[in-house]
Structures are given as structure tokens and as C-alpha cells.
Amino acid sequence: MNTKVPEHYLLCYNSSCALAEKCLRHHAATLGNKKDPVVTVVNPLLNGGESCKYFRQHRTVRMAYGMQHAFDNVLAKDIAAIRSSFRRHFGNGPYYSRVKGTRPITPQDQKFINEEFCRYGYKDEVVFDRYEDEIEW
Image 1 (cartoon, helix red, strand yellow):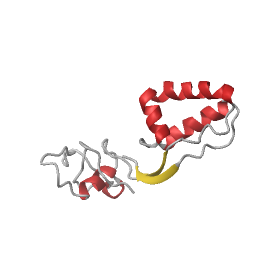
Image 2: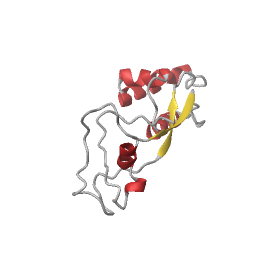
Image 3: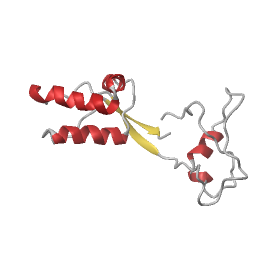
Image 4: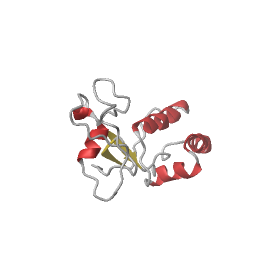
């Protein structure tokens, strides 16, 4: 599982907050950043309680990587239109990064991809090249 905190991620060191155990920002702070001399932190005097506006649920999601075989069972007449739809949605470069497996495909993006195939009459779920459980930053 990838536990590398993204660069410039907002941290929270307020361990007395009622939401701390479930908060991704607090979890990230406990991992111990030893490379950055300066970090961005939520002011502990202004957050806490049950309604912190900086709260981010700590959860793991199943990311997909690669779409090398996504079009194996697609009719030639549909391939260009489906690819075009993906390129419009993701952008040209980001689409091809997802196809090659160098950029993760989030659960929301997996849903979009499957819905697009369904829209063209392909009901089988897309099988991506590989899957990894990762923290949803």
C-alpha cells in the first residue's frame, strides 16, 4: 500500500480532536515528515470537534492501473468513438498515461470507463491490467 504523503499535503497534529482517529490529515502527520523543513499545518486552535472543515476521511480504495486489453472485445467500429470519449474526459496525455498504467485509475474513473463501454453496448466490466489498494489522498 502506498503511504507516501503527497507533496504540500495539509497536515493536522491535533491529536485531541474528536475526529483525529479517522482523519487522513492527522494520519499523514503521524507518519513523520523528515524531508521538508517547513510543512503546512491546520491551526489546532481553530479546528477540532465534530465539524472540522479540514477533515478528510482516512480510507483505502482499490486503484486500477493499465488498460492494455480494455478494447480486446470491442468492435472496430466503436473503438475510435470510445477512445475519443475517454480523451475528451481525461485529456489526451492523461488518457494515455492511464492506458499504459503509469497513472492510477480512481474508482470514480473506473466507473466512468465502465459506463462508457455500457453506453456502446458492452456490458462486461473492464478488466484493468492490475489493481492496488491505496490510501485515497
